[in-house]
Image 1 (spheres, one colour):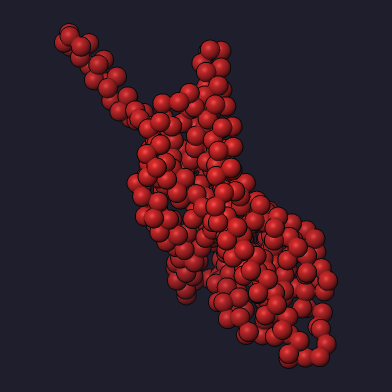
Image 2 (spheres, one colour):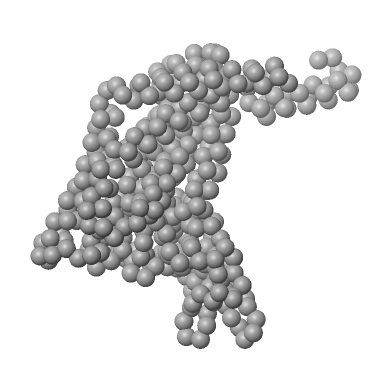
Length: 356
């Protein structure tokens, strides 16, 4: 047992450390990384300048909610950009080895398959972390206006990083399954688009005409009837995790006054179908329909569910684990199921007395 564990550890170390160093050195060469960084920061800076220009053009003074509006715009933009950059960065990790004809050479080294996959995935995660750190000065402009708690900024960064973890692993799995980097990139971007927007649209259509969901408790006479919460697949989208991250979304939305319809109207309307606001993510009491309007009743039965950003992080972790396992199984020269079938046939032949 000790020999087996030692061999596994050696294989993991021989694959993880060299592969991580190789990928990180490769990403610093050429023009792709500087151009991607410039594109990422350029879009965020342009959004900040355009927002402030619109605000100052309409009024001669700065309203108190300007900081909140700017933070909401930057957090949403950063998370959406990382959601599409993460799979694009990882989509050529394994398929690129095939195109350069170094894939077979990589498999005959002492590196384990798990070490190879983890090394390539962590290299992509490290690059995404670099993008997030580079965007901090742009996000710091928000604190010039105030109105944004530091905890909310931290939660936005957590959502951004977990978005990169899950979607980056998905892009790596598609890179292992598909033979061409271009095909892996296109398919990964399409799947991410469906996860980000399609899951919310499907959930919104499915909930049309039903009682709004959430941790809701309906009061019928003296009895309490529980209503099921939003479907699990809604937490595959980072937009669902933004409800507690963006303060004031439940009551005032993003207060954009219709200037950005996607943020001010569409996103809020979809999330309100499931009562996914700051209160729905933080109150431990059950929501109840009292006389007149829904409210929070301390005595009402309820459940202290995880906030939406924590549920999103959990879904991203599960997605990352499944994607990494698929990547290891796909690149294995001898598939585990093939080995299992061969051993089963060998046992059957032995029991029948047929020579192997």
